[in-house]
Length: 294
Image 1 (cartoon, helix red, strand yellow):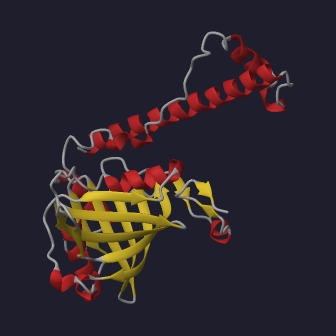
Image 2 (image 1 turned 135 degrees about the vertical axis):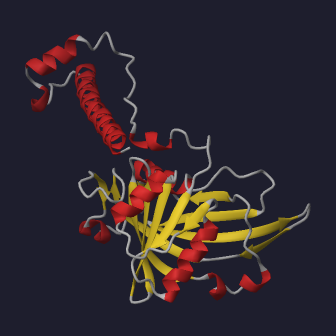
Image 3 (image 1 turned 180 degrees about the horizontal axis):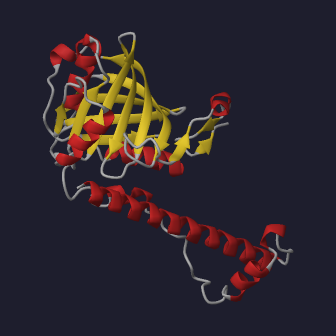
């Protein structure tokens, strides 16, 4: 099993390396093509024997499209099978963190909650793979307040780290007494996601849930505002005249701050994206929306 995992990981990394090289060649050809079309001189970095070799084949691959990326190949079979989620906490969790993990167990269909105990991350990842889990969700806390969540996809990643804010448990929601937790597969609503990074985060969250049935009365909303994703969980009853909506809970806001291309126990995994300090001061830029606000 370990040999197969290592081989699959090497094949995955090798495939990404080839794609990176193909993308670089494609971008160089695009620059040469644009320079020839506009009559401008070639940029200094494109002058030389390599550029001349690329220019010879421009007429042969004029219809070349942008190379596709296999970064999301982990989700290529999404929809063909239902995801299986393992939910756990950091060590020695407080009662509030344990309760939050229990409520996440109901948020994600087909999920299992595991008491962390003395298990290491490597042991958790190994157990998740051995039991056919597709994702591992780990929640952390600071002084009894849930403040972070890690979502790791198996077998090769990605792993996304979120900070948690304004966590409200189910019994703290005003309408919790008038609603029940449904076991239906929920409909999903994503608002405010765009660009490459926004699509990446949306796919990580979207594929934690199985495909719902059309008559499902359960809906979960992920709304992005200034890179803070607000999560809301509702059930509804619709008639031909009106719809009654009740919030079930829990509710929280989360913000991604790092994306790794490996699984949670792989410390040597490449960092795909990380939130830099200067991004916090760029108030007009929205990373997940893929645009700059005015």
